[in-house]
Amino acid sequence: MTKYQPVIGLEIHAVLETRSKMFDDAPVVDSTHGAPNIAVSPVSAGMPGVLPVINQRAVEYALRVALALDCEIALTSIFERKSYFYPDLPKGYQISQYQHPLARNGELTIHTSQGEQVVRIRRVHIEEDTGKLTHVEEDGENYSLVDLNRAGVPLLEIVTEPDLHSVEAVRAYAYGLRAVLRYLGVNSGNLEKGLLRIEPNISLRPKGSEEMGTRTEIKNLNSFRTLERALSYEIERQTEVLNSGGDIRQQTLGWNEAEQVTVPQRSKEEAEDYRYFPEPDLPPLVLEQSWVDEIRAGLPELPYTKQQRFVQQYQLKQGRAALLVEDQAVAEFFEAAMGAAQDIEARLVANWITGDLFSHMNDSGEDIEDLKLKPANLGTLVQLVSSGEINQPTAKGVLAEMLGSGRSPAEIIEEHGLGQISDTGQIEAMVSEVLAANPDELAEYHAGKEQLAQWFFGQVMRTAQGQANPQLLRMELERQLSESKQ
Ligand code: ADP
Ligand code: MG
Image (tube, rainbow, N blue to C red; front, side, top):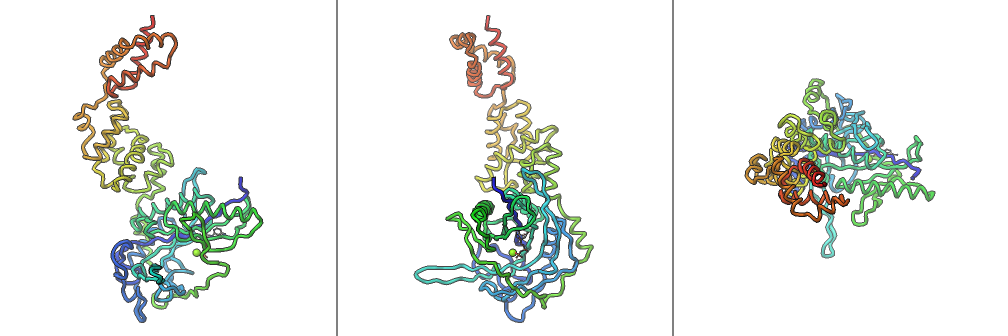
């Protein structure tokens, strides 16, 4: 057992996926498509003398998030200049919010193996993204390319209090927040494309201590997997440093994927001086309360609320419910399947979705909305299994066909004659046939080799080509075995 408790706070940058940029009308383009520098206006190129204009839709998106996170909204917030030099920042400063952010004091509830936890959110503010540098080394030449497509794209920064104490909690928070952003339609949640960037700050402290240790910050994590790996590594590394009597240096770290280690990028011992001051080219951002109220009223049922409702209403386990609510369309599919008839077993529907459907979607790259399979037909399929009309292996085959053709389970079962044999007369005949054909095994069974009952079961099932109702078959087999004893 380690004597330290990890203390982790997250800074998350989410691109607000609006049509145009934060302060001008250049389009927001997908980073993986098109050529560099095709979405650059004089404003995002940082030309002198041009003026920024606030994108109202971006503010609306930011408000949706801030309200969903139960923040206090500042009806007046201020854009400020954060000055620093970098080749992907032609203005020499980034417009951000600092002293007077759009929103503060929010929270997001998460669920882990330790139970429910409320993670406090310190602030939510709007800023603009920078451009992108590509460092090239070829034929002895060494240079960097600047692409300003991303410069000026609206970003939302969401900063937590240092309330997270395990990799599991970080994972739950990161997935939970991503689900919120997706439900609100403001961000598609793609870490690989850099649309969502998660930067953990991490320190250790002796268990029971209230003081905070010196922290490191990890940047450029482009998947949930690297987030978890980098954090685990960093907890381990800091533990070893402290155990050997060393001190943690306050640093910004990167993640080396090849070596699976964190590596120092720059030292943070001196606080950066960004010379923040209010952006003179923009007025304060003043919101009308009625607009804020309207946006609040338009929020959908949020993922965590939905998760708790699923647990209550359908008696699902937290983990299963969490999987279903992560994507709103999946949650809708589940409820539509449940609505197909009375008393469909929710646990089974959830199992089919998170098992067979997810793996099918993984293989085919389809979203749940793209499936030919209609949710009501999944509900019906589950019912056919519960009522014993078809067995589980048959159902798997039927589902595969439903996914391929979109036809109803009834049609498929009818066409292939897949209905389960539940006719007692038929089962009785098959059992006696098998017992009569295997007199030696029957004698051994009666002499005490009881495990042969299972073997007989298998023989009859084979005769029935797997379609005998297993409960009826077992009962009938038991009856005939004990009757054949004398
Ligand atoms: P900065 O602006 O320098 O990045 P902040 O004080 O705003 O720093 O904190 C950034 C993030 O780091 C927040 O999520 C906060 O909760 C977290 N944090 C601050 N101090 C610590 C610490 N000692 N250990 C772990 N996380 C911390
Ligand atoms: Mg920071």
